[in-house]
Amino acid sequence: MEKTISELAMLWSRILEKIRIRLGEDGAPVFDTFFKDTYISEIRGNKLIIATNTLVAENCLNSSYKGMVDEIVRDSMESDFEVTFVHLTSEAKEKSDDSRPTFFASSKLNPAYTFKNFVVGQSNREAYQASLMISKNPGELYNPLLIYSDSGLGKTHLLHAIGNAIKSSSPNKRVLYVTTQDFFDEYVNFVKGEHGDDNLKTFFKTSVDVLLVDDIQMLVGKRKTEEMFFSVFQTLYSMGKQIVITSDQHPSRLEGLDERLKSRFTQGLPLSINVPDKETCEAILRMRIEANGLDVSQFDPEVISFFATKFSTNVRELEGALNRLIFYVVNVRPSQHITLELAIDSVRGLIDVKTDEANLSIAKIINVVADYYNLSPAQITGKIRTSQIALARHIAMYLSRDILDAQYVKIGEAFGGKDHATVMSAIAKVGKMLKDDTELSKAIGDIKGRLSNNHI
Ligand code: ADP
Ligand code: MG
Image (cartoon, rainbow, N blue to C red; front, side, top):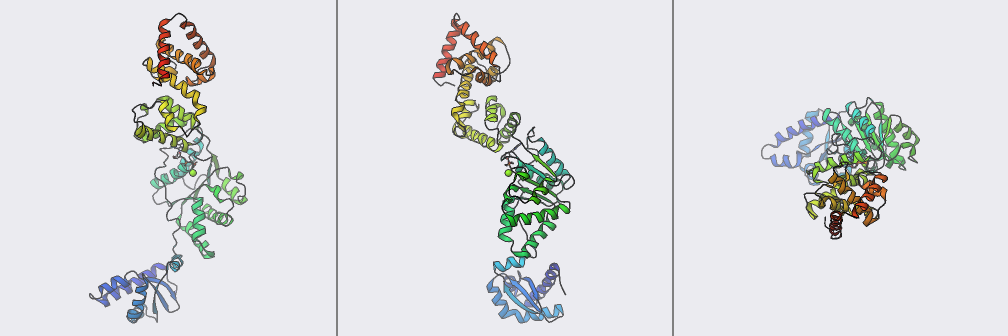
């Protein structure tokens, strides 16, 4: 008669209880040391194979207690069973554990990635909305949801956000996040033979309600893993379980990927994330600054704008640059106010500073002029036209041309996107005024002095 695992476990625990009583108080140490951790490993004919926790236990129990245990077992099971104690080596143990395998034991959701801390913009709106919808109705809308983009644009973040949202609204749903590499490793290292294949399939069938698979492009060229994944996909899909997949490109462009997988992956909703626009990058920066316990107002707006422009193609790099800046202003040059110059210093090496030399210098001129007139750099590059601010602005433009010979267009960009004609006329105006305004020539002389002293 076949017995289920739990029936066997109950049966053995009843037998153990009898053994404990038979051994009595004096035998308690023997019971605790040798018997307590034993369990039924297998029933082979009339042989009851009992697993022990060490080889010593195996020897001791077989030589000294077998007769007593046989008797108790025969009484309890009313049949002619004979007990053998064995210590299972780790290899054998794996095999015996096969009946209740736990795969992907170390796969976890990262609680740091949520919908709340995902900044939404034009570039990622669709992917965000679809992810949010899916987390509210897993398995009911698009299956699979596939998000693809270049690296560093938020795919992994969204995948975890979906998982975290489902876990918090439906704690009973079993969410599994795996990278394709995990899937490959697990399959190659732990699944052996047909039996193992079936176990893995059973695991997905019985233990997963929502499957989140990251970086599916890694499947390419791994034939057997592809096949296994196909089977797992079909099973979960047919059971109405939600599947979300990410890829670094649209599946149709994954050369060498099984055609069946390509078509399955795109049958739900494939969505792309694009490079974020400047506004989104700036919002991400502000959010990260606050998340680091700093105040955004400590940063010159130019700093945010510069980073958002310079590191816009990859949010991971954007964050990396910001972390570097934060490290720098906390540890290297502690400062309450973070200027563009400081910011550029902190990321020197990350960027090709040469191409930024003109910008940097214009920025420096803006800072020095602002300082000279007790204004903020933002006022200089802004739109307000009170005479004092306008004059300072025009002087800074004039100096940019005079000292750096910067192009009008470049100057315009550095001054908050002023057009070429505006810049030209401002510079001409200052040139003309200089001819007979001694106060102005003195101011410009002073400012040049400060600039050459690197005073900032
Ligand atoms: P991918 O998986 O596409 O390579 P990630 O999800 O790992 O990218 O994102 C890289 C980093 O950028 C992560 O720290 C992530 O939190 C962050 N990130 C990406 N997009 C956004 C966003 N829209 N809002 C906030 N953080 C983002
Ligand atoms: Mg990723």
